[in-house]
Length: 265
Image (cartoon, rainbow, N blue to C red):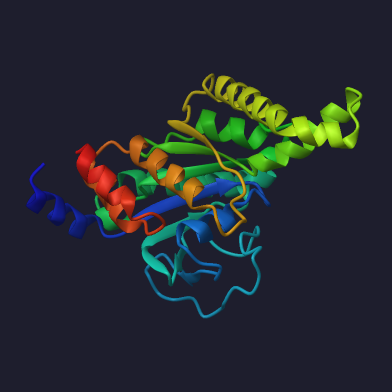
């Protein structure tokens, strides 16, 4: 594609907009902070771009009733991203689900390019190992048509499977030292099995996800490789070169991605 045409599309599209979905304590806040290279909380704007008068004072800012899905969350460290949060429907509220669905339908097809959402990150935490797929996931993937907007399922807190691995090994008769020595391999097996199970379950739904990606240790400062995987996975799910380039140019977690992407093109 002609670089001049891409630049014009950038100007029309504006910033890269992501809807983040997931139950409470799914690790959403941490992911967004890592992607934007910060530990600060975001600024909040209403759907018209006006800064909200109230401020966030806790990392648990994704609380049901704390904001409207149309509100925009922007981190000072990287204002190229706009995030929306779906808090509410995961807890079983039909009203919140309908609001979320209406928002997705509207923002996936609006002629106002600067108001479109470009990707959806659906977080499923692996600390809920015994029941990763709930009614909320089934309802979303069976009833919410996201159109051309790709949904990437993020298997968050994948490192929590280490605890399940230790418990399994202890149940199998290993002492703690032996269990710790083998836990890494068992953890990998559990993650593979879990990803296969989730993929199989969700691909039976009417509107299946586009991609799946496990994320681990996002709460650690040295989580750049995980952010890189997230950006690349999202880029691969996008259906236009212009959006791919906008995402790659917006991210600041790994500047070598820009070079690799340029060479790939």
